[in-house]
Image (cartoon, rainbow, N blue to C red; front, side, top):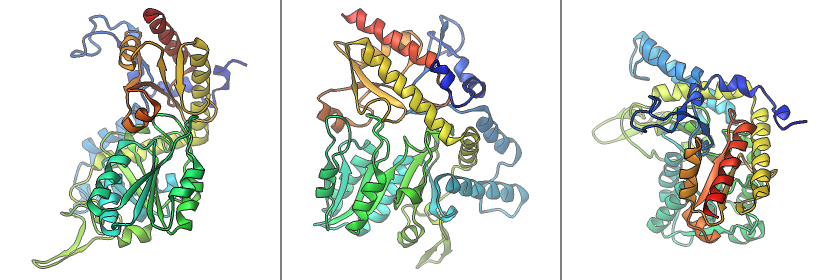
Length: 425
């Protein structure tokens, strides 16, 4: 059986929902799609940075602006009521998607980074003191690492890092040593955006809770491509972004256990998050609105729910199987090329991305050459500079896959990498 025959759904039917995949590239970037050498089919393998947006989600945004564009929670008129209902129901949709108890546990944020900062400032500044510690991992994205680092500086709390093994997994014996009676928070990436490693969140949650600590998981690279249930994971906080899961930019979500969010003070202040204001005092609106100050990203929030509906129609189990298929195939084919070093666990034990370097070729040069073949990948440190320092490299190339990618596109990647290797040989 060919690899294509193992697809868990009709990939070509999915691709039809993404007109951008018909782009041809290679022309003047200031006039995209207008000739001048645009003759190479686009192979988009930069999905860990941002995914593309299908027509049904784009249509949802257009429908809002064309049909019921109004502010939420402010007007009695019909347009405001329609917008408010749609925006509130979007919270319900996202809550159901990740197994939250209800909309009270889902705060819409700008992205995963803002969700991380919300908890760090609204919870961390209030709860952390000198002598406390926060436990991260060596594979954390800067959105977690830098945020808790700065909170540690402000509060005097220690920030510790669980070591990453040579195979790209967390050293769980080291984790058990670091998480102690002074630990207040464990903040860990669910799926590494650099290594592809799928971390044992439930095991880490148990270690944290045994020490009366909380756990925050960064789901930016897991929620888009595999079934996630925050209750099963045992997390206290969980964050993810819409733009990595077929949604628009400018919208993400923070899951927090209701009793925790209820006990926290707001991170931002202003309109819509208040219940009663006097010249002397203010009281806050119910969850989740007390954390959504000002006019929110209404169209984006409604479209976020449309993206969830789109993914659920395909089926998250099938999406996970498809990404695993492509990641394992890419891992095997790149390994067989020779002269390619791949980072992280084997292809059958990772999320839907492969980070690698080609001997004698800087990752930025490799990305530039691949671009000439129409292949779009990420090159750099992927917002994980300390991890790259540990690996002894300044940068790496990363190919990341999604629902619309195909085996043929992986073949195009491998062929282009081979050409680049031979060019620098």
